[in-house]
Length: 573
Image (tube, rainbow, N blue to C red; front, side, top):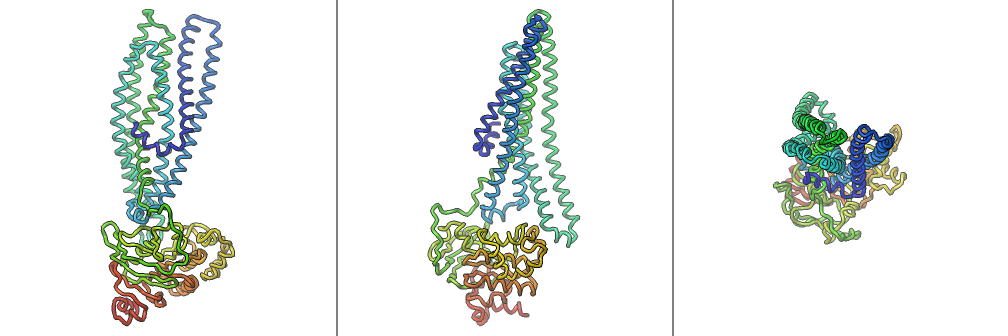
């Protein structure tokens, strides 16, 4: 149990004051209940037995006072633990969000459960953790009640108390076996729930393909299989959770029968009183509550402990791009970007092998090559989504590792083939390039990106919401909004990653006009499959299998009759 509780400490340490008051009010509740047991003894011995008229009113009023203070303590006890658990769950979700956006792309690419699995940890695992934190209040409160009641029972009859507590080791052994099984199946259950969440998200993200290829039945079958697996694990967990209750109740009933027989003989022989018997039985009855609560908490905390492990595995993950402690300022008057002996491995696969080239300020350099040749990896290394295995990328001799990530990325604008837009208005999506800009700046950027005309035709213009990932507007329109976002950012370095390859000819013409405005006065690193989009580049690098094969202008490379010439010929057949 102690090992399980230590897993919660990272989440509780910032709420020590609240947990102290939870403990304090729990002790008050326990003392009030033990006081009630004592009053029961006086009621039967002094009022019903000795017929003391002075206590006829005092003892009932004593019950009222005790339960008044018990009610106040109970309110603050439960209020504090529940609100604290809400605070902790919200903080954990915030920390997870910050952590997930800081982890490098290698982590996200390798994570087996995908974005759906990470969503499950953020939602489902945190909910399970939250329920475990609420259960901690039982662990803080019920042991005190149990200790006070045990002391009372031993004071009245230590021999009978010893006999009563012979069942404690039996319950302990049972709970130990149950907890081992629960931790095992707790991992399996939460992994199964993660798979379910991932399937739901995948189905929503891929709805167009699913319906187009008539995959509704296949996706339903996958979900049914995952749901069946989840229910199998839950069945094992629920059966183990519920078996402990009947066992403890059967043992308790046998114990109560034994007490009645023993105390009956003691009272008949004049060795005890009815008040002592009622106090002992009341104490034992009250004891059922801490035993049951501790038993439930022990079982539930096993599952919450699994959730805590899974959450800490993310929160303590170190797979993020390291930040330098004392970063240098971005060299604003830079003249050259150099890629020096860049090699990169993804797991064991060599993606880039000793790549060397330079980009001069104001140049447009294009990367051309087959899919998987390493082009996108190069630009991702430049934005430090991850770092090269060997080599360095420098701006006027200053390694980009010596710059802060925020400062580096503030000087780079990215436009990709797979456009990501937020489920918000067009205005807010363009403003995400720089939220300090005004609405007039947004309109100006949209006009330069050749997006203003189609935006003005929308029902609410720039205030029109465009749906999840911009699904309510066309591909060309999405791309023009993303170009407007890059124009608004006004970064001196531009990365275009297949920015027009997924568009039809008409849309490409409009988008190309926007790109021409975006390219003015900027240094550009362009990736393209369509060679028509890179013919105006100052230099073209032809990459194959992570190695630069050729370098030159469009006309120079055609004259070489090499790899670029082959690409060009294939696209003009």
